[in-house]
Image (cartoon, rainbow, N blue to C red; front, side, top):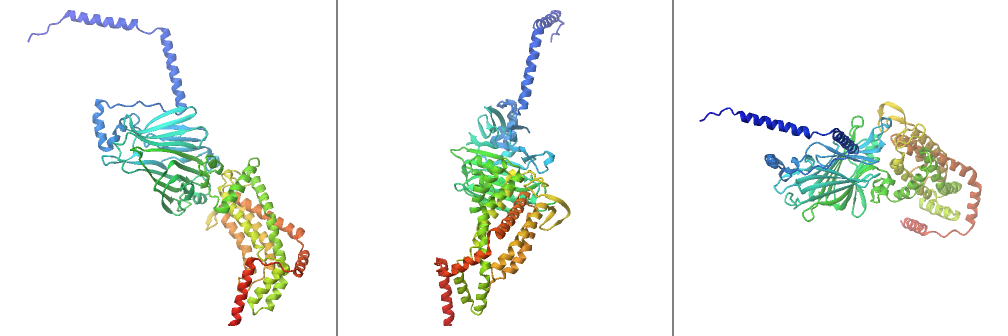
Length: 630
C-alpha cells in the first residue's frame, strides 16, 4: 500500500475555510438594536407565560407521533396496556394536574385517571371557624372515579391508572377542560369539564371516539365513583346521622340508600346520585338514566373519640351503555352546600335531598317555614330571626290553643256530673258510657274537641325538628353564647362521657327543659280535672304526673347534641305558650259563663248526633241488649 504523504495544500485549504466561517459569523452578528429588540421580545414572552400560569391554565399539548426509536417502547407497553399503550407514550403521561376555578369552587384534575382529586369550596370553612381551613369535599385520595375498560384482546384496564391528555381552553368566561385517554391520534375516551362563573354545577361529559375496535362493546362499561366523606361540622354524631346516599329514580322520585352500618341497593333508572353530608353534598347528574346502578353506604364512625376524620364511605357502580359502538353521556357534577334555596335554583330536583319530612311535614317546611324564615333572616340577625319566627308561628297557633283550653274548661265544669254518673252506674259500665254521652250531647260539649287542636299542632312541632337541623343558613352563625346555631351550644366541657347525653353541657336545652316543665305543670292540673278516669283505662292523672318530669328530662338528653337553633326555638315556643295560656286562663275564658252556657244548652233540644255518635250509640245499645239476654 502506498504511504499517504503529508499534503501542505490541504492544510492551507482547511485554514482558509475556517477563516471564511469566522468572517461570515462576524458579518451576521446582531446589531445593538437587534439585541435590544430580542431582549424585549423575551421579556414579553416571559410576562405572557407568567400571566398564563396565574390563571392556572394548561398549554395545549402537541399530539405525539411514535418515531422509529419509540417502536420498541410501544411494543413493550402494548403487552400490559393493549390498545391504550399509545397514551403512555405522550408527554402527558406523568403525574401532573390542571386547576380550574371560579368564585365558588376550585377543582384540581389529575392527568392520571383524568378525574377530580381536589374539590374545594372557597366560601365555607370547616367547624374550626378560626382555623381558616376551607371545606374540601375531595382531597388526599378520599375519592376516585374509575371506568373498567374491557378490551377486545380480553384485558381489563382501569382508567384511574392510565394517563389522560389535558387541553384547557376558554369559551368566553367558561373554562373547558378536556381529558383524553388515547388509543391513537384520533381514538380516545374523553372526560370534558365545563366550569362557568359563579356556579357550583360543573358540566361533565363522557364520550368515546373510534374505540369500537379497542373496547368490547357487547356489554356496558362499569363506572365506579367512590367518596369517603370528610367531617366538616362540630358534632360528628349529628353529621354522621345526616350523611347518606340520595338518588332520583322513576321520573322524579327521591329515595335514600339507608342509614345502617352497611347498606347496599341496586336501583333501576337513576337520574342522579347524591353523596349528601350534613351541610354539603356531591352530586352526579345524568341526561339519560343509569340502569341497574349499585349503591353502597358504609358507616366509618365506630368510636366518636377515635374516628374523627371521616363519617361515611359511599360507593356507586354505574353501567355506561354503548350506543352505536360509542359511549356518549352528558352529565354534571355538583360540589356545594346542601342549601335548599341554592339546590332549588338549579331546577333539577336537587332540593329534595334535604330531609324536610314526608307528607304534611314537608309541606309545612316548604310552604311556611322556609319562606318565612328566609324572609326574616334576610334583614335580621339569625338568632333574633328565630325568636320572631317562633312568635309568629305561636301567635298563628293561638286560636287552636284557645280552642283546646276552652274544651278543657268545659270538661272541667261537667266533671262533677260525670263523677255522679260514675257513682250512679258503678256496676253498669255500659250504661255509664251511654249516660255520659247523653250528657255531652245535651251540654253541647265534644270530648274530642280538646284532642283535635293538639293533633293540629303536632305536625308543626315535628316539622320544626326537621327544619332547624337542615337549615344551612344557621351554619356558623352565632347568637349570645352559641357560636354556631347549627351545632350544640356547649358551655361546659365534661372530663367524661355520659351515655346518651355526651361529654358537654349545652345551655339552650336546659332552658327549653325548664320551660316545658313549667308549661306542663301549669296545664296538667286542668287536664286531670277535665278528664275523669274511665273504667278499664289507664290512670291519666298518674301518667301526667310522670310526664311532667319525663318530658323535660327527654328534652335535656335529646337536644344536648342537637343544634342550638332548635333548642332556642323550643325554649321560646314554650315561653310563649305559657304566656298565651296565662292570658286565656285569666283574662279570656270565664268559667262561670261556661257553666251558665252549659246549663242553658241542657234546656234546649239536644243537637242532632253525628253519624259517628249515632253509630257509637247503636253499638252500645246492641252490647247492652246482648248483655241482658245473657
